[in-house]
Length: 426
Image 1 (cartoon, helix red, strand yellow):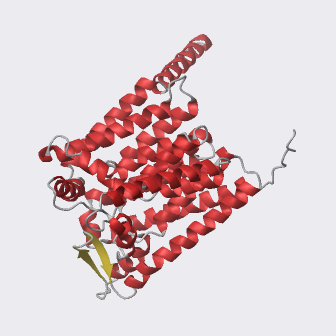
Image 2 (cartoon, helix red, strand yellow):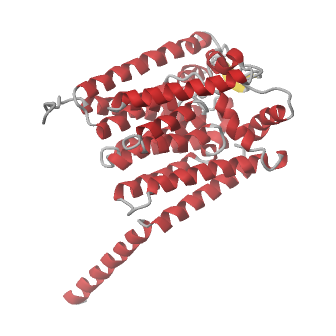
Image 3 (spheres, rainbow, N blue to C red):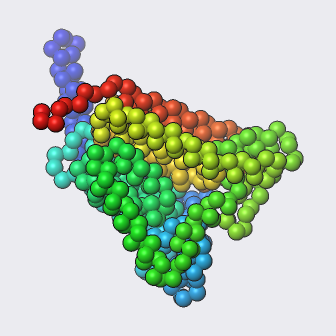
């Protein structure tokens, strides 16, 4: 082969790589991947072992039907484990009748994801960072598996992503979205807190959040809820230590070691598997103050960074991630669907600072993969405290600890150098 042939072959390979990058970097490829992954997740929810759509079809549908038939309205007639707006998607899933409840639920979630995916891609020229964030989100959903669509959390994640994407340019709209999300499932309140700390328009954000929350509470009271509108606070506080909670690892390893005093039991009131054994109730009670301490520490770190002039785009993504991971690690529930929360701050981080967020993006992807290995396919073995599944859960918690360490360090570094303030007439 002559030198000319080598150069020609090299040029051909370069053209092929360029063509491939152009194809994968286009909107068509992204939307095709989005459709393929969501189609696969829908099929897994409907047919996968362990029936990951079980909570939707068994529990959510029963709640929605009871309300539709005038029996019991959860959160209004009786206390409920969820905030009141969680009933909106649950009721909407009855649109095509009870027999199609599961399919309608999945359709609603896919539609929400598609709307926010379009927002992420934008209407103008597709930027490299948004392209990267979109590919990561699609991959994250594939790694997480069917649980990414099959719980109430799935309805809040796209709302939270949209809120964070609009946080810089439209903070009031972001406040509306994150507040609505928090009244569906509490966790977006952490993102709202991060926005209040990081934004220069925190007064507007706070006013919108308070006014909208007051309106939601007022409508609930008019509907006859009374204190049941806030019943989710007491309902969560009364839970035991759930099987998948990070703190539960200490007792799961005791079961693996043969300690007969520790058992896994099913709570028929909360409909979850929990740990029963010496110290488990104390640990469950301690999770709330531990979470509060963790949140306060993150708040103080965020305030320090703001006071030292940390730029909004540099501070908000790691601050939001730190809040979310604290909620995950100090949680007495720890359900697998909680991992979906990681998508919102990571997507924002990849849009604003892709190189900086490469590490948390990889760690979050690892958490998603391990979560799918545990649930739904081998969840029954975790119920028996099989050593391999307990080890997998341990790896998941370890990755979350690394995520927390990274995010706390990033928030600290964001305020590491005091930025000189310009005079008012500059």
